Image (cartoon, rainbow, N blue to C red):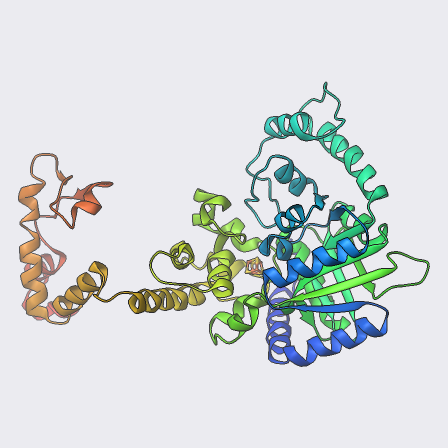
Length: 445
Ligand code: SF4
C-alpha cells in the first residue's frame, strides 16, 4: 500500500514536520482549540493526570444520570484506567470495538494497539462469547461471520439505549475546534452520534493546527495501520449541533506525563506518534514476545519509549526502566514509522536515562557498572587487552569436555545458569592476523 504512493517519503516528511511544529506551539494550539470548542457549545476540561481525568469523566457520567456508557476504542482511556475507575464508581463501561469487546468480556488485556485481541483464536472467542455475552445463541459456531453477528446483536442494543458515550480522538483541529476519530467497524460512528452526551478524552499531543494538516495524516494512517488506501469510517465533529447528534459534548484534555515528555529534547519525538502500530508489526522483539510481555498499555517499540517517558523511571526496580532494552536496535521501526520517529535513538537515550536513574538510587556502583568500568579499562590499552585475551584462553580448559562452558563460579554463574558459553577458540582474531598477515599489518584491522 505504501509503495503505491510515489510521494510516500514526502508525506512522511510532512507528517513529521507538522507534528514537530504542533509540539513547538502546543500551548497556543490548545488554547485555540478550547476557545473554538467552547464557541461551538462544547465544554473543555483540563486533566493533569489519570486521577483527575477519571474523576472528571465519572462526574460527567453521573451528572447525565447514566450508569452505563458505550466506548469507542481509545488508548488514552486505557492509559488512565478509565474503565476500572468507572466500575469503581458504579458505572459500567461497554467496549464497542469488536476486539476490545473480546478483551473486555475475556477479562483480558490488549496485546496490540490496533488489534487488541490478536492473541485470541476464534475458538477462544466463541468460548468467551458463550460464557460472558448476555443473550448469546448457545449454538454459536466459531465462524468469524457468526461471531461478528453475535457481537453486532449485543452491541446494537447498547448503542440504542446508551445515554453517554466515551471516546478518544485521533486528531483535533485547532483552527475550527474539530475532533476526529478514525475506525473501521462503524461502532465509533454509532457512539459519536447516537447518545445524548459525548465525552472525549484526548492526549494533548493530538492537536494539529489546520484542516490541511489532517490531509497528510489521513493518508499516512490507514496505509500504515491496516494497509487500507483510505480509512473506512472517519468521523469529525465540532461542538454540538442543535437537533443533530449528542446535545452535550465534553472534551477532556489529558496531560498525564506529556508535558514532562515534551521537556525531554530527545524523547519529545515520541509524542508525534499517530498510533498506527506499524512499528509493532515489524519489530522482531514484539514478534517473539507479543504485547503482554511489555507490561505496559502501549506495547512494542513505541511503548518501549512512550511508557517510560509518560510515567518516568525510578531506578532499577521500576519495570518501566527495562522497557527501553526491549529492542535489538535494528531500526525496522524507524523505517516503518509514517511520521519518521527515530525510535532507536530515543531508546538509546532512555537507556542512558535508566542508567542515570539507577545510579541515583544506589549507594554503591552496581555489579554491571563495575564490570563495564573494568572492561573499559582493559580495552583502552592494547597490552592489557592482549593479556586479557590470553587469560580468556583458560576457558578452553573449562569447556574441554563438552566443547562449551556450562557452569562458572559467581557472579558469572548468573549467566551460565540459563545459557552455555561457547568454548573460547584456540586462537584469537588478532593472533590469527599477526600470524597470517605479518607484524606490519597488525594494526590495519
Ligand atoms: S511510533 Fe510510528 S510506527 Fe509506531 S505506532 Fe507510532 S506512528 Fe506508528
